[in-house]
Image (tube, rainbow, N blue to C red; front, side):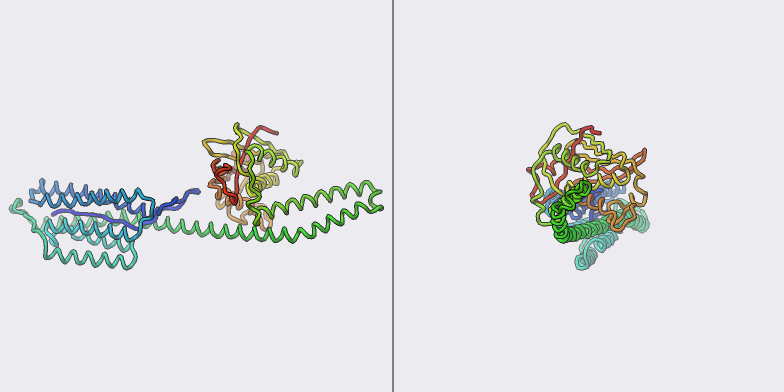
Length: 462
């Protein structure tokens, strides 16, 4: 008796990205490539198992076997594996039809080996059930029924066309007991392989579902970003008119004799005019980052210049803040400045300032081509339930309506740049948010006009 196994597992699906943000499968069809590689591995197992069986049955039990033809079938499986490895070297997606064809080749190899070793009387014919089960799990309905039909035809053919086993080397042996032993081995082999590989397929399918759910969530988040951008742009346009009116009225008041003679009122007018100008500048930034002028906001600058100007501007708007600006980057590479990037850093600084106005730190470093920019504070830190789903919109400890959008936007902007965000609590208290970005994504030559950018710098500063 001969165990001839060509084990196929085809359309299992690959796991999602990691942490990352991962993840993702690059330009190739990760599920198809992964399953084809699995087929290769299983075919090597089949070749090895059949060689062991030939040794035990032929040499151990002294059963005469057609070694030449059976070795030819094993050579065919090796050649199929060589072709599969060549196919794996190509980035093009592996279609289901290719995987189904691989299963049929395995069924054909099993049929040839069984036909050379007793046909339907060989107890290892039950390995056909393994092929059918895997097809039902992995292929669509039509392909599965095709596999059922092929295996049924092969089994029927084995009842007519086969080479009987030469058992003359086993005089006086209990052939029925040997057959039962072979059936037991086949059952255990079937059961073990089904548990191992169906479990793996199920795990991969769950990973596929999780990946699709993550992609749907990302699409919903990006749709929300678009809606917020449209809302912000519309609000900025609407607020522009009343601000212009206020500016005109304040200009008229400045020329009124009743007010020009009062230094205290004139000082208050100066403050009001400064605040109106600041509101106009904020609205201009909203229009640039949320509307069609996005590409116009991108400009060539350097890492240090970008962050130095950002810190100076933020300090000017928060004179009471105790911001420590730590710069550990020696070089000053050229980057692309973008309003969205600037707003992300400002959001982190604003959040830290709200909970820790007496101390916050902006730290920037560069290591192995990765720019690390972190904002730390000495506030109460993040609650455990916030850390569990950080980056989700409207999850905030501030308790106000619409809170939680700052970190949500940070996560999405950094993700667009191919980076990642780490959020946690410092051992001594307070929160720490770190952005890690590939410096290549910020290079002037690598950036399209419509993409956001990121930068960082450091330099001990109190």
